[in-house]
Image (cartoon, rainbow, N blue to C red; front, side):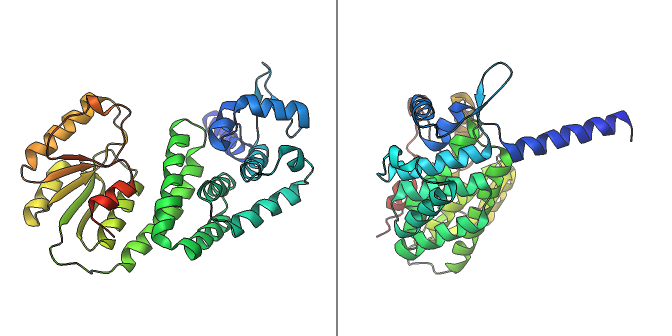
Length: 313
């Protein structure tokens, strides 16, 4: 083996080791668990719940196992159990209590935090149990609106902040994607009288289509027509499809674009090439005052708003 190959193997092993062992800062822990860094430090000092490792420069960091323990503690604490009671539980008792609560209760934040644990642990079985329990009690659509979609939004924030690694994000996104595709297929082709037609796509370079699938499901569920083109589609191709089968609404997202100038340039182009359609942008902006205004532009910040837009019961 040459030196270059040895170096590549060493680098790959390091990446694998980092994924398995975890390397979370206290700020990462705060973002993922919702426990303030100050509170966590107090709990560590007063109750000894965790003894984080430290780097050579004395910066604390946490492993995957420590993160999972903190997430379990967070769930029980949010459920109303005092930290002084939680610290007396063994690791097995802690895990058992969380599973017991997540099975018995359908409180939204509790289920979302349980899904975060499933993502961190890369545990498909746990994900399936949580989803099955919520679907049984709430139905799939309400589970989608109140559990899965808020969880998906949280994953996006954690991923952008670097609090979770790409492998964890891909794992959970693909599981949700599978569920959405099955749910969309189960709708069949039931189209109501006077239905509108929606053309959905992501611009070139945009690869995260999960949000678009949420919208596709609700559109079909409402009895409207869907033309779904998916991710990273050249605008010329979107135009050709619309010429062959004209839509009433164009739906897209600009997740990788943050600069208002870039977003506005795309929106203006869409308004120009689709002069008779309304354009719906699904992503949220911190300051919408900087985004282009036009009577044919529609901004939807949540699935609930979009559900109302579709005039669903």
